Picture 1 (cartoon, each protein chain N blue to C red):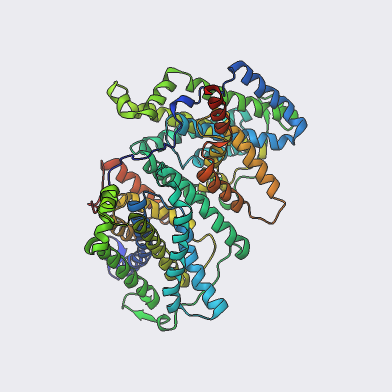
Picture 2: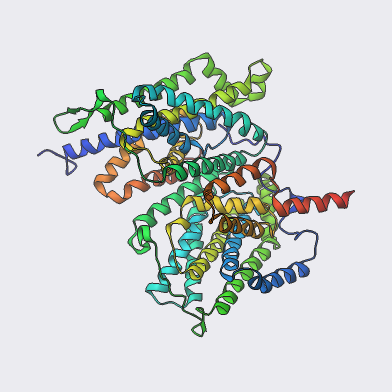
Length: 331
Length: 295
């Protein structure tokens, strides 16, 4: 069995529609719009709901950095998201770290885990890569089940939020909201920087034609590993922040279904679009909140959306929008 | 008391036997995955749900209709195989010329739906199922007492694995299948009905998972999420055995069961992660393949 590709449609986005474009509108406008939404949102929806969307939005955007920019589908990102939330919850509760340090510790842990997982996984491509990341993440899951510091089945509960920089009391809703939205904006800004840097351009070249990138003299595996670590660290940043917001770290965030969920969010919003993953996270989190009151099991609904997206809506919401705009321009 | 490597011999052999029984389940699940992967290039995320459905059909036949184990062994794979035909014809077929990763995402979605429905109606707790009448006794092997049903599993799984391998390696149908795996267009040009072979392969893989489910019920009971973590282990085994290699999947499946058995004696908590450590080792050491798969 050789790893030949005979597909007419690639999973990764075609290069004319990379993460770089924010949908035909200029960057300043997009940033202004995003900040406006963040400021207005808590008056429209429950702040805790908005913060949840921001955490998952950043998680999905971090995952998307890998699939959209490098064309690597990771099925193990829950390990970084959940792993960082465990580390953050533990350091907040047991070591009395300040929340920003705890979040940074969690992020660093996720980055290091990404280095280990990536080192093994980037030896394979496409579907093999997905399998390997899934297996390593599952190994980490078993580790979390058995390791006493994680609290096993109960997780780590009643995590104190503490004082950011020792002076801002995060138990105040407004302060917490400011903290989470800062993390969210900084996270997105980092992704933006990475994508629009020479490093990001090389990643896109690897995605479009790895052999050509190698023949040009790029050590592609190092670039891939770099992207993997950045993506893992940012996924960890999202998980760490979630631990501060919800004051728990639990096994659900490291289980492989979470890896699937972040893929779904990205797919719904649009793989390889800049704001797609955030929109996808909004849709899925809103749906889960909405369904919670009904008798239909949530997994049946998410599964149905998954199937529907794969069959008839592969571009996702933002992806479809960009596609239509692009088509109108041509006509 | 005799010892071997500082471990009591009876304990060692006992654990090896238990490992062999686990390995039987691993091998049976993995060949189904490997066959499907070889032909459709799809990582079949519904496999755990197929296994669960096989167990469910067995349990439901007895609970609702009073139909026994031996009938279930025939009925369950037929029912699940038929279900797989519908899935393949209606959904999977549409992804033929797309990136194989879409197949993974689609089957993942389907498994969420199936497991969600069953969890809704049957909760998460296990439901008991007694071993069939003829196999309730135990065999005294001198150093340990082996429940005869567990012995039956080892024999049944070996028979199943060997016959699957023989069908694929030694029959005309198998040669079509192997040829189609290598070059589908060429085989199509020779007038062989490729879409039919693809559907058949998928149904075969699903039926194998269902039979595994039937064999598992008396030991593991039936519960809606029984296939979830087991399936990930089977994925890793397929990677270790060389993607799509039948022989590799069988050998790796049994070997892993035995390795886990030994790990339980040495350091019990490590048993769960053994498979992933092996997989990482295989990926780091060998460039392409560990066992010589059926090329």
